[in-house]
Image (cartoon, rainbow, N blue to C red):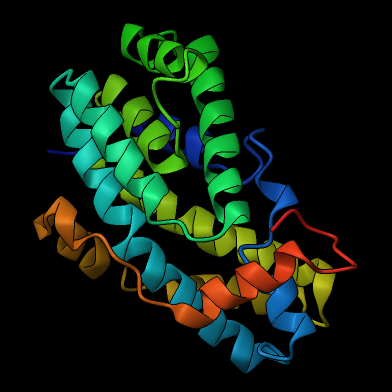
Length: 230
């Protein structure tokens, strides 16, 4: 059965890279990757984005699917536990800051636009300090509150991870809009398989092994010159 067009519109709206949650202020670690010559051209940029997407799918992506299930069941305590486990797996202070800042803003926007009780209750938990408010959980709560499927939330999450890095690339290196759009088209081609893996995984499987990315994030914390917040 074809989903209603309104559902597609909602997915597009809350998955828009221009949705005002501050994602443009972050580079997904790309700034340090360029400064340390890990990313030097289009080829290495593409490899970097692929690695970031794999890390996102196997880490936050699994947590997102689990959070969507908890949110759909109205299990707020379960959401808090998932949120904490997502937060604990972020080694860099900047990565943690990025997730909670965008997550809280996304929840605030959802509470004002959608106005669903579930989203408002989640925002109250964040404001009270009872939840971290990581972005994957905020996205899951928003989509569950609108009866939008976990698959769509996962796709929005992966698209956002890639778009954030490629958007930063346009400001940090010699790459064109055509180049970044071509890369976006290529790296998201296997998003269905990534979702199936995340949907079949257990929460304890949540782990994105990318040590170089963590090192670059740590380097960025003490960088003398920074355009982006991470």
